[in-house]
Image (tube, rainbow, N blue to C red; front, top):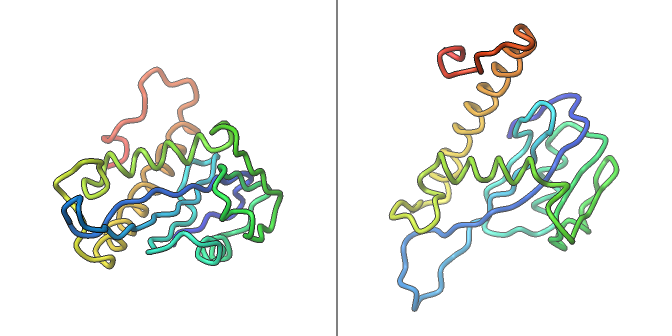
Length: 167
């Protein structure tokens, strides 16, 4: 788990996938990835890979991260039983308050082949998925921090931040 001191607004969301390949006729086991993302800077400040998405699992993620002023969630009812240290905005009508975390979850699905929909790649063990996600989160946050640093050192730069600036 990563944490970021001083995050003002964080957003929480969950995505799911399956362990192992099974024919559609068999029951597949869901794996939930819950993410907590700060808006500024755009960082993954908490994540959990679990076989459930119950309130107590989300609570462990929230408790392990640094406190924020505002916590934004979508309409999933499991968030209602979580005790947030700041204000909780529960938006069941649209994704206006969770646009950042939705984007990060799209990045997870894009950059981690295991999480791509309708993929032939799939995790065979929960531990493997956790390890891949841990490595991705560290790299994603490091890249984001460098990007933020570059932009603060080069305000109004006409050339955007690139991978070469990261290296």
